[in-house]
Image (cartoon, rainbow, N blue to C red; front, top):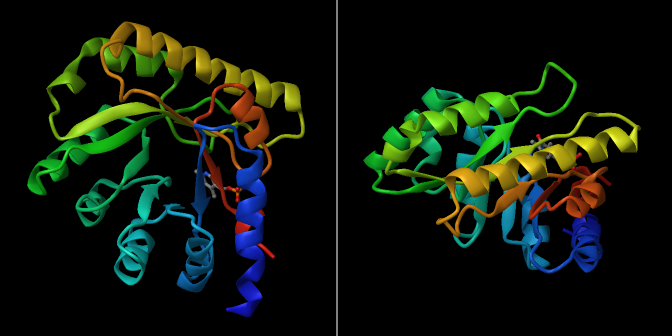
Amino acid sequence: MRHNSYIGERIEAIRATLPTGVTLIAVSKYHPAEAIEAAYSAGQRDFGESKAQDLVAKQQQLPKDINWHFIGHLQSNKIKYIAPFVHLIHSIDSLRLLQEVNKQGAKVNRRIPCLLQIHIAQEETKFGFLPAECMAMLEEGIWRELENVEIRGVMCMASNTDNEQQIENEFAAVKRLFDEMKERFFADNDNFSIISAGMSDDHQIAIKHGSTHIRIGSSIFVE
Ligand SMILES: *Cc1c(COP(=O)(O)O)cnc(C)c1O
């Protein structure tokens, strides 16, 4: 485990910069259980994975008090594997997917916490609701009948660019959207409180614009 000793140091260094109320999610995709154990030893309890099968395999192998976040593109046929234990699904990008998660949540008698992924970046390869689409979905109201999911907030990925002003504009737009959603649809729900935004290279900008959950992979795990 000696070769993993930098992991705990990296986590402590990042944590020292975070305002209170911001949760660090260590994105452990592509990294083995030993790397997660090193982070766990440093007190880290929230981990993110982007493939359902990896999430399941690691959940079985590692301590049971870990909060497992699903951050990747979710296929409907994989939901059942993660439904029993997943802590938060960050990547709901359609009403249909939300309905599928609801169905699997019912089977395991859970109300599964979910975020709506907002497509804000300029790259077309990224997933998520367009802001107007997301508002229309909430307006339509079908989500209100889904008793086995709970919408806790939004998630986004900024454009992969060196243009900080653009990144800043994107995070600011998501914050405005979150505030509007809160006011129009979730004013009476204190659990609607999460903005999952910011990765290794842009989390400081995201925090400036209200991020509550940052998802950091390479700056923790890559040597
Ligand atoms: C991989 C990934 C991250 C972490 O990215 P880093 O740049 O390695 O910090 C965060 N969010 C999502 C959705 C990812 O797929």
